[in-house]
Image: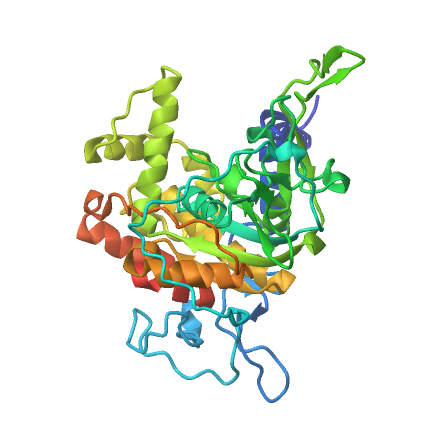
Length: 460
């Protein structure tokens, strides 16, 4: 007869085996990351480094940031007091939620200086936002050859924060195509993804549009290339959106290439019909990336806009019907907040903030938003690429200046068409109570790095 002491370790092994079998590939990686300490808040605080911080007289990093030596997200240690903030990117000298901003001991360059434009014989007239755009010249992009290998400037954005408008703006002004990581969604007439150069046919990036008369990224210009990186899934649990710096950065380089490509061979049209999906996952080298445009939108508007997109998808699939009203949003939040309780309980990042998170409808959406912008900033720093931070609302507040800054950053001097008028659309702050907005602000401050907080503070 087997004793009770002998049975116990057998039960533990069987339970562990069942848990692994239950998890899919993503879930397995998630629980492995929890066990190894890659995800979540460790019991003992590891060594931290100030993001864009300074060093003391002994050459040690000043504490107060929210990342460890690998750049991965950690909890802020409130017992160490408030961290030292570097100068605000927006130039504001007032006091924020963290109090007055002290002068840093060492200047941190968060954004590269705007490249100088060449002097033109005649000054360019201002581009008013209300002017109707010139119709772009239509010509099949497949017939155009690239004059030189483009230099990539990432368009880094959390979904529903101005990605499509920014890409279309650049295409309209330059009459040139921009690029994307997601070539499976921009196929040509044969169902093929179109790489920016032949040697990138297996890796991407890919051209984003068929309707412009030339390719972007020529003659020293930077080719704006869309990427959402990782950790941006909608209506998912922590196992799918908790990232490390390494996995997030890998996501920035990863895309989708169509495998439904049809070509005529000796008069016969061929197509790969055996593939289980309509795309292959591909990845290019980080050395292609020279710059980044980081687009940020008000988190309250961003979260509600993503709900509207999710509700539209569910209606199209004849699933649960959530209307776009405040009540529909609340009903969705009640459902999704209760769907991943066990996964959240396994992470100290959630369990240590349980009371705070319970005050926020769709709290996981705000966690995703904050983590995404944190890792976007860390990726820019890790790759040492000049970055232009573009707040979505700046298109409305100072349209011409914002467009000029963007064009200069991409080293685009020749503009062929006037941009379309920007419509800022609705704002959804009224979907949240004052108490809920205060809770979101507290959450944002507690888990944001210094630089990320400087970029987001204006919204609270």
